[in-house]
Amino acid sequence: MQYKFVTEQENYTDLSSGRVFHSLAGHPAFPVRLASEILQRCQAVRAASGATGPCVLYDPCCGAAYHLSVLAYLHREMFRQVIGSDVDARAVALAAQNLALLNLDGLEQRTAQLQQLYTQYGKSSHREALISADILRERIRAANPLNVHSFCANALDAQSLTAGLQGSQADIVFADIPYGQHSQWQRGGADPVRAMLEGLLTILSPISVVAIASDKAQKVAHEAYQRVEHFQIGKRRVVILKRLE
Image (cartoon, rainbow, N blue to C red; front, side, top):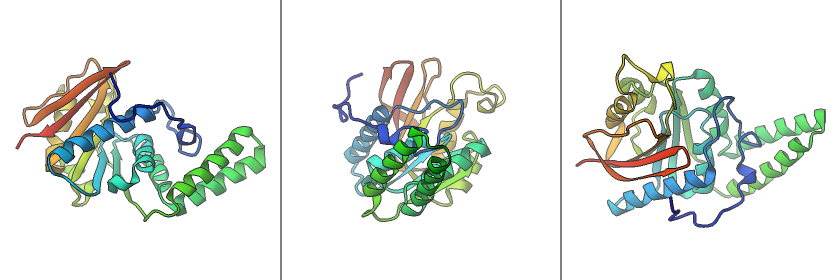
C-alpha cells in the first residue's frame, strides 16, 4: 500500500499506547500512521460528496478507544464529536478514560496519576510519560472542548447502537473489527460483518463513510454500500465504503 496523505514517517512516541493513553491487555494498538491515513482517505471521500465542516467520528468496536483518541489529537479540527462503543463493559470503562484525555480536565487527572506513580516508584517510564503528557497538554490547551461519548453496546445490534448514539449520526465510522472466532462477534451463525453493516445503516447520514480494518479472511460487503477502495498492509485488509444513494 502506498500512503497518499501521511507520506512521511513521523515520531508518534508521545501517543504510544500505555504511555499517557491507557492500553487494553490482549488488544494490540492500531498503528498510528495507518489510522491517520485511513481517516484522511475517509475525509477525502466525504469532501468529494460535498461534506464540509467538523464531523462525528464513531467506532462500534472501540476497545479502549486508543485509535479514536489518537486521531482526535492529530486531527482535532476535523471533529465535533468522537464516540466509541464496545460489547465489553471493561473496555468501555477504559475507553472513557482515554477519551477524557482529549480535554484538559481529563489530561490533568491523568498527569496527577502519572506523577503519583513516578513519586512512588521512580521509574523512567513514568518520567517519560509525564513529559509526553506535557506535550499533549500544549496541543490541546488552546483548543475548544471536544464532545466525547462512550457506551456499552453490541456492534451487531442496531437498536442498541441507535440508543447509545443518543440521536447523533456518524459521519465517519472507523472500526478495527475482531479477528478470529470471538464468541461475542458471532451471532447465530450469521456473518458478523454483514450484520454490523446492516445495523450501522440506522445511524449513518446519506454521505457517511465507513472504514473497516479486518484480517484477510473476513469479507466486508453489503448491498447497501459501495466499496470506494480497499488495500492490504501486513496482515490487515482495509475496506472503505459509502452508502448507496
